[in-house]
Image (tube, rainbow over all chains, first blue to last red; front, top):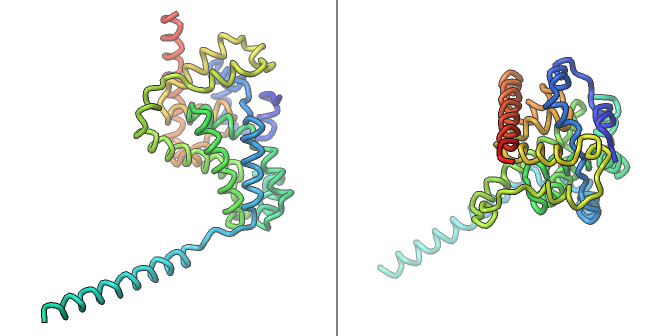
Length: 90
Length: 187
C-alpha cells in the first residue's frame, strides 16, 4: 500500500501547494486510501497496451487521403447514376 | 519534469517495453483511483483505465522530449472520462444511480493504514462529499489534493489558466466543506 508520502515524493515540490498542505480539509483528501485497479483489470489493460506499443496511429495525411479516395469513388457512382437517369429520359 | 520521467519518455518514444513497464508501475494505481473517483463507476473506470494505457502505447512515438509524462497521462484520462460522461448522460439507468462505486470498493477491501488512521467513518463521509461535487470541482480536488499535483500542472491537465484553476480549487474546497456539513446535519 502506498502512503501519502510516497505519492508526494514522486511529484516535484511546488511552493503554491502550501495552500493545499496547510488546509486541513485538503490535507485530509491527500490521506484518502489508494484505490488500485482489480488484478484482472490491471492485467488486461497492461497486456493490451503492451500489444499496441510501437504500433503507430495512422497519420492525419493517411486519414485525409483515405477520406478523399472514398469521396472520389462515391462521386463516380453519383455521376454514373445521373448519366443513367439522363439516358432513361432521352 | 524530473530526469526519470525524461528517460522514460525517451524509452517510450522508441517503443521499449521496459520503459512502458516502468511508467505503468509508477502511475497505474494513481490513475485507477483518479478515474474511479472521477467517474464514480467501477466498470467505466476499468474501461477508461484501459483506454488511457492503450492511448499511451499508441501515441508514445509522438511524445516530445519536454512532454510532462504525468500530466499527459492524467490529461488523456481526464478527457476520456469527460467524453464518457457525455455519453452516459443518455443512459437513464445510470442516471438513476446516486451512490458512487468508490464506497463499494472501499467496503470490499481490507482497511488500508490510511483508512485506519483517518477513521473509517470520516473516510466514507469525505468520499461521499467528494462524489457529490460537480465534475469540474471534483477533478480539481482530485488532481491537486488527492494526487498532490502542482496547481500549474493540474491547470494544464484541465485546460484552463493557472489563475482560473486556483479559483476553481478554492471554490471546490468551499463546496466540499458545505457538503460535509450537510452530511453531518443529515445524520
